Image (cartoon, helix red, strand yellow):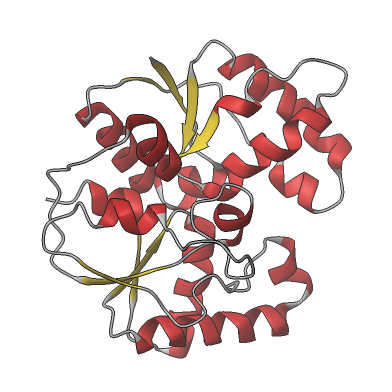
Length: 243
């Protein structure tokens, strides 16, 4: 099984340690991992802003670059969801090779590798942030609006870590207010949503908030720092590789 590692823009630019942790984690599981150095953005910012025509060449490049791999794995639920859900339409003139095999790190470990143990240790109380794309486009956890048995793949993986205490906030799959362009165009609403979400995480008594999306964590971290709220933020890849 050959894996192409896709490191999205936010991770590459602002949180490179998340990319390093993802690579280390996949290699520690004995997987054959390659990082194509010519990779670029998947096109999500352009698509979400209403400029899909600008996302088409990026989707084409992504598809060509990652087509040889059995799986494409990214430490970002939103970027994996964009490739999976929107690239086929962007590439409707051509057969999209990569959409069906592009996965977020959490779903890949949970559903494909089926990890049952990890050598990680993280003796802290951690609140799970269920990001919108992960919940409703990738199925990383059960949406609260659907009458189905509850599940959470993020929580399942975290429980493999020694010493960790995993909790979830009230209204666990409510948006944090990031949404990319939404946080720019509707700043006041985005900020209010972010403050409410961070305070719900704090109410759990957690020391850290974790999740599969650096973008959501970045948004909440910025709010917490500005409002001087006592909680820290860490990507799940960093917890799963913590020693």
